[in-house]
Length: 112
Length: 117
Image (tube, rainbow over all chains, first blue to last red):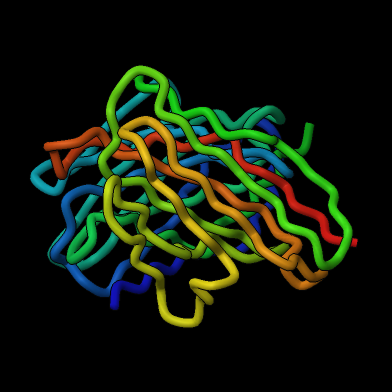
């Protein structure tokens, strides 16, 4: 069964810093990997989707990379802002049922 | 992008009662929907896969008689928590992929915060 792990579990940085969130998964047979943001008590906001054939995706200050063979993905956030404070989840989509397997999440706090 | 609507967004119920949560795909047909739950400070865990016109498939450890899933149409799946107990208090969220393409992104509902008192 696919297992997804995120490191670190929590991260606190001053505003303006660049940061990297890590995600690892045990089974490289995936269709895609998606990064989400979750604000307290709320649903999920999709940030970036990387197909299994791609190596990275960028959206604004966010850049996500994927190394499928090693089972790793990173989310890079440039010039962090207090509004970036949230929990970030990575999820991989794979066999057999086409469902998503979620990571444990990284709780990010950006200090003004 | 595609929209998945989940209702209600929060509900408080008494122990022993049943609660129904709806998940609708608003602008596409979803032959499959996924139900997840998230306990405090934990990640989302898949509970069951809802299949239109057939029985849902449940993950190990999820009681099918307690969490009733109905996927009667291509745009609606419902999760009913029967005889709810305080330990069922959790955040429940549904997801629907666009059919036919395995590599599409998933679209999630807004989630439902269930509190059983």
